[in-house]
Length: 139
Length: 277
Image (tube, rainbow over all chains, first blue to last red; front, side):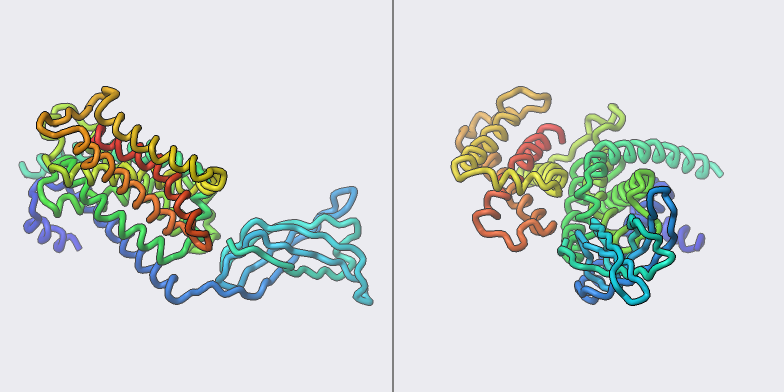
């Protein structure tokens, strides 16, 4: 590596060009090439396909006057979702709705996770929690 | 070993210039770094258009480095190297600042990171180049600027227009203002842009004011620099709006008024660039 640098140094047009300038110029050049290659690759291959939403309850906290269920929602599609409306329902053993809560998530990029929380009156640990996306806006 | 001592000196001198570049990048990029729309746009905008925007920026940076003759720029190759250094400086700065702001989350996917940083890098890299050339040691004053003629003037105007319009274009306000204006407002804004552009360079008496050549008539100067400069600013504004997706699904009349709105700051940027650079 160092031998190639000295070899290049003897050929460079300006004998005073500091090594630091070569180094940073190289980083900048690599960044630009990598960035453009990545963007073109993404632009050509990865269209904007909406996909499945996979959600999971992370934890339930007793707040004294109710419960907070923290959840994650994973956007498995490549389409970024803005204003994603998410609804959580607490279902009893007969799958009857006991309570529901909703949240609007500002923005979920493609293949990404977001976190949030639902406030409930009933203890979600004793019931079934069903979380579904209801709709989104294209950003 | 004698050459080694010499090289350390030049290395140290370069480090000072580099710190200046970071300072300039910070000064120029801070308004963009602290605008929410730019984070979202960088992540959301069409990937290919972002690539086009970056490719379009490259010749502009190389040209700026060449004409401004910063440090020891003598050849086109040196200018290319300087342009890439400016990009590296701007990117490193954007990563550091956005990370401190908590905008960059290590858990975010790579394309979010790349989009956010790439869009920030535009203003920052222009700032880094200017700082190296403009805020440098005074003793270089005499060779500060290469004589470039009319083409160089257009070039500086394009750079100034790109810088200011890239700062303003990501905000929602451009479309809001365009929406609120009627055709008469738009017409007044065009006249105002042209008048201010001309006044900036020839009338108000800023440092660096251009004296009109004696054999050149006022209308000719107006057409040669001000009108062409305005068209340049408008074209650059339209290009940036298209890259950012501001024209998608928008009626032709609205496209025109958005361009006129954004051409206003772009025109001021173009005129100021002629004075400052």
